Length: 210
Image (cartoon, rainbow, N blue to C red):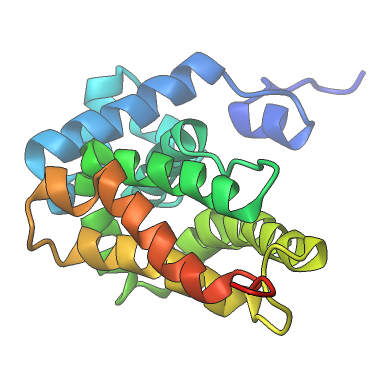
């Protein structure tokens, strides 16, 4: 008779079985709470495990280090609250999408993203994770919005979609990382509307006689 061994969480994951979603949620929530309370440089796996009511190895089975936990926690929430919106026109799509991102940046997500982006400058793994999990997927959708705008005649021909996205979203990250007007002003809906009007003034197809 073959000897049977106890099944571990790792074995279940390898077999394609879902992990305990509630445990994962507690860990992510604990990382966000402690990060905001202590500062993210003060976060430890031990502290998050204690706050979440789990063992350290439960965290290490899922994430390689504490920053990987923080990235998952932040991006999971931001992706839910600020998804890229697709509307009838490129202008409307970006206006709605950028308002959602700005609202997220004005709240506790902004406080979390600042140290994450800063640390990513010296942590290649973290930088790649932020790019893969946040920027690449969103830019793919946003790039398609630009291309549809060009195809429909809303936007002028010859535009480079990536430069368009840099022009639109670059100011949001600039003001997130280098605040100078106060949180409520620098990323308000009025600021987004003015930014959209300014950038789209150079993007839209010029009408004959205008």
